[in-house]
Image (cartoon, rainbow, N blue to C red; front, side, top):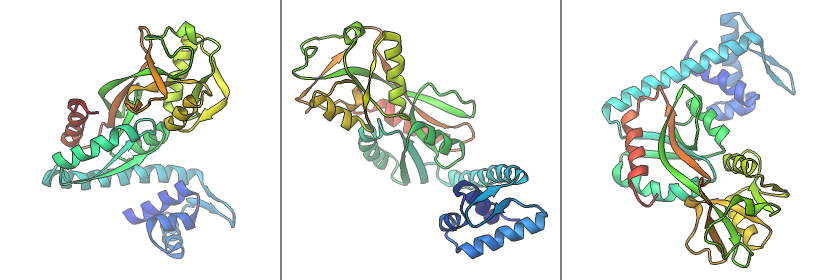
Length: 293
């Protein structure tokens, strides 16, 4: 048994395919299958049930794979510790961000990181929150920019900033002349929100439920930019986080809400066990201390 074999069985379990796992591990499918078969024979167990259409994990296989994941994470931890000892601000670092913040913060953050941490190779991953949390907890990424609250004892969430929501309406909309918005004024207004799976949608819905505002059920967008264009087209109104507001939006009015203002809080989230604490601290400071972010 070796780490390579453990990587093979974890890849098969995650992809549900020997072919895809082989591609992921950069080996031929026969080689991967042979090594897994040898591992099963040495342990005298079946990790996978195989047929022409499906790959299923056996009950004992599930336990073996969970243990294999922990071993691989520990091995990676050892490697990171060694690199960290040589230069805590060098090497690869994978940072995740969710879609309604990545386009607005990463283009400003990346040049700062390159300037302050020239020996760091930053790898960026843009995914929805649930996927980023899974990748974070399984060691596939080092840290992530996420909206809180984060309820997981295995993770550390460092607050970066509050991102206030404003009401976005077309310039010719009846509400466009107002300087502040009371949520009661949005009753019966066609409110546009993002599609399922976006954390911004969940945060907006919480505010809507508290304020008695109904969502426009027939229209849902997959990005803030789509929502922005739909507002310009007078399809409806929406909530826009301040970080996404552009100065050249001449066709949209952004109106603040009365207190308590709806907002989301952005955190830099990492694993409790991540050894690169000094680097994560530097990244947090870059986000917090720079007025452009």
